[in-house]
Amino acid sequence: MLLLNIDYVPGREIAEALGIVKGTTVQSKNFGRDFMAGMKTLVGGEIVGYTEMLTEARQIATKRMVDEAERLNADAVVNVRFSSSSIMQGAAEVVAYGTAVRLA
Image (cartoon, rainbow, N blue to C red; front, top):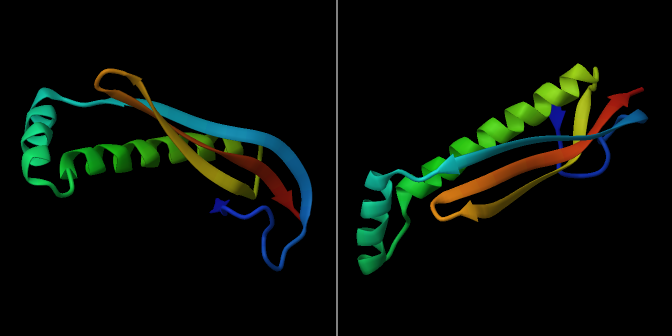
């Protein structure tokens, strides 16, 4: 599945827009990550545990979006975007969405 964050496929014509497809997941922090993150804020720098958690969440959301596009027999998803938000204390939602298309 071709995924692009532009609204066209270079060198190809979009024959049909099939609609918006999305994938979502909610990930929660665990106590160990929370404790280590709290310690890291004292000295500064990247909080690797959270970076890994959000990377995994984006991968899950992307796969779910692609699965939905495949059910529509799409060739590509254009204008792919990611969004994240805090759902509650200690949990974040990640959404991947775009437009499923068939190519000519």
